[in-house]
Length: 217
Image (tube, rainbow, N blue to C red; front, side, top):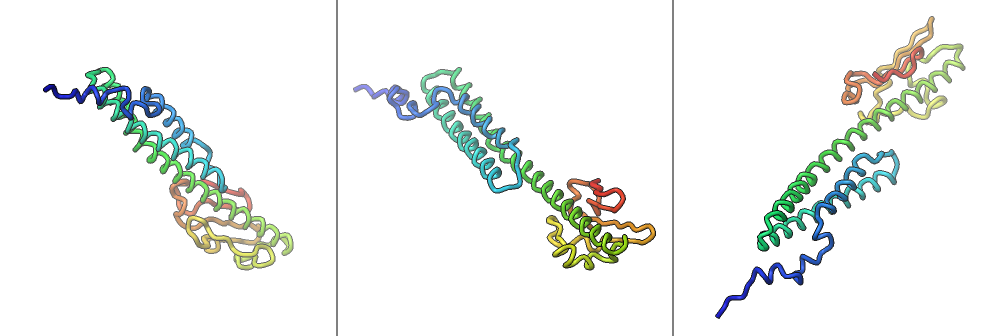
C-alpha cells in the first residue's frame, strides 16, 4: 500500500496559508510597514493631545505589519523548502531577516526620538518661565522708578500669581539664582542646576538678563 504524499497536500493551492493576504509578496508588505514606521518616526511631535496619539497609532500599525511579515516569511520559507524552490527560500529568509531587524530597530529609534523631543519641550517651557518672569520684573521696574526687586517674592501676587517651577526640576529653580543691582539697574536670572544638561551641556542654563535677554547656551 502506497503512503500518501504529505508534501503534496502541504503545498496544495488549497492550503490555508497560501490564501492569506500578501502571501505572494511579503517584501511589498514589509516596504509599506517600514514606510509607516519611518513616517511615524519623523512626524512632528507637537505638544498637544492629538498628534502624539496619531503618531503612536501609525507606528503601531507599522509594527503590527512587520510582525505579520515575519510570520508570512516563515510560512513562505516552509512552503518553498517542501517545494524545493531554493530561490524563494533565500528570498523569504532575506525578507524575514529584514523584518526582524526592523522590529527591534524602529522601537529603539522611536523611543530615542521621543525622549529627545520630551527634553526639548521641557527646555522650551523653562525658557518660557524665564520670559514670563522678565515681563513681571519689567512691570515692577516701571512702577518703582526703574528699580528691580531684591527678590522674586516681591513680584507676588501683583505682577505674577506664583513663581513658576522648572518642568525638569519640578521645583522653583529661579528664586535662588536671581540677582539684581542698582545704578545701573540690571538683573540676572537663570535656571539653577543641571536639569537641562542634555540640551545645553552646561549648568545654570538657560539664563535671562535685563541687557541680553534670553541666553540659551
